[in-house]
Length: 77
Image (cartoon, rainbow, N blue to C red):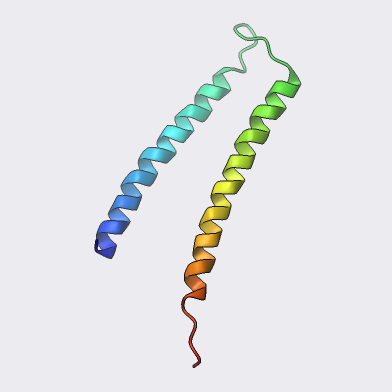
């Protein structure tokens, strides 16, 4: 697959997946309505910890991919 095709595929999938993730986060935010839901502060802390942990792991994967690509550019010049 050509680089241009890879880029377009990435943009399409990233747009779709990020939009879905943002919508899911908005739905989680709807749970904050105390007139419809009963929850503890501990529940909220667990939700945000899980989200932050997964977001951190995702960022790490991108950082590691960048480092691997950079290390492949070794030359003796």
